Image (cartoon, rainbow, N blue to C red):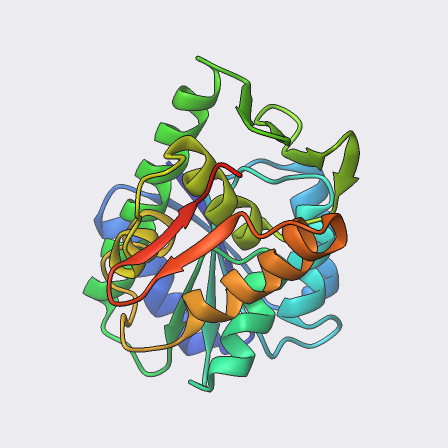
Length: 228
């Protein structure tokens, strides 16, 4: 496995590199956003570890540009901030997980391994069936596209993943904890209102423009896609 470390702090970058190497993971280090973008365009990795505050180009911008041509490789963002708004912004840019500084290297290794395993599993599952149809909503897994009534809907990676789970389990109530675990892993803080924020985003994009109310809340239990 090969992991790219994008972190401008030389000491932290080296510590992460050493921790990965100790787990037989091949690390490659870069210290600024512009150089990182050039590397991401020409090389492939199993996971990206990316700081937010980078010289040259921020982690938010770097991740957004990366997702324009690569939607598969998981991105773990590092930040000195723990505010929900920063995390939502990172997820909207395409990040798969967040780790707030300071952190234990063991936790970083666990998250990297979890992201890689989940990414490989997702690629395997998507090769079996590339289309999900739930009433008027069509999801093309190969193209990572969503449409309703024949009209394409632009979703962020996290919105897409939540909608995919709801459509795959149409009519079944999916708990908040299950959504968090499947999308962000078991290490994500279940006490935040991140899922509620994304459900609201989805309703504004998938339901309201079409005069529908398909994404339902069962108070105290979770969310489900209703067949209207």
